[in-house]
Image (cartoon, rainbow over all chains, first blue to last red; front, side, top):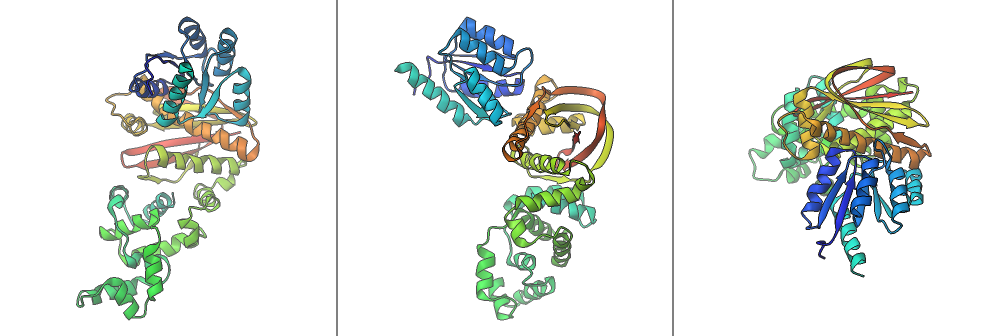
Length: 127
Length: 294
């Protein structure tokens, strides 16, 4: 499955989490990987770049991931935002889905999970 | 995880040194269990009987198991059963220490009997890594029962050790805890857990150990402590604490949130409530974990 048309954004305040994800995703041949270190930057960069898929942490400074996903989905109802958080409680899951998140994955995230999500995104784009 | 606490027990009893344990944890990956240690652990043979078979074996060309049966120490089915069981981690540790001459079979026999008695553990408890026994072992080891929120301390620490094994490695020895009111270290990562109750959690270490811990988690090498090293240790803490909040929500219906991690370099942190300091000795040095609950 070619991922060459996929633009990805990673929004996480952890430099470690961003670097690990970017390093892996970059090996898959995607078109572009954007990064944001807080919720506010995530919203701004989404509006400017419209990535095909966003991996969004929840606990972030300035604006939480839940607040950011709400704004992103208001701006673009077709946005595909995957919450990627260490806090995968039922409440957070519910809040994320209600805010418009497409899915929720619990940290630590495996490379397989990321690859599957990106491949599914590519399939959806090709439809 | 029983292996790490068995190691700590041996260290505390003065039967091994920290260096012996570090070496044994490294070597145990290549250790093959021998029938003698398995039979001692199962309570089917004494160390004297094992030694007798060892001596006898030197003068006859027979396998250890066949000699045990011939001498009436074991039955054929005992031998088959012992050899077919998956060796547990603490037994591999014991076998490694016996192989390297740090402990004799008799030392191992006395230690394993005392360890099991002290902690009310059976072979089934240990081989199955039973959660309730593990929690009891950890609670007893750290004297959490003296704290008001014993369940929280016990479950947090049990998860912490599981995550250390999962993300850092199993070559560590838990050391005895102490109650502290403040913490000073070259590097401290602190994260507050808030909600139905509040906890402060920390990882603290000297520079070399802090980097080594981060290297294990990131699976990369570092030459100095920079923002990325801080973020790496911070992410370990975030993942561990995140899994803890999931457990609290799923198993107890308790909803908690995590605050962003704070990095403290060459600073002193003062705790509002008494905190448990949990030192862990890795092969690369000592790292301290702290939990304070209110």
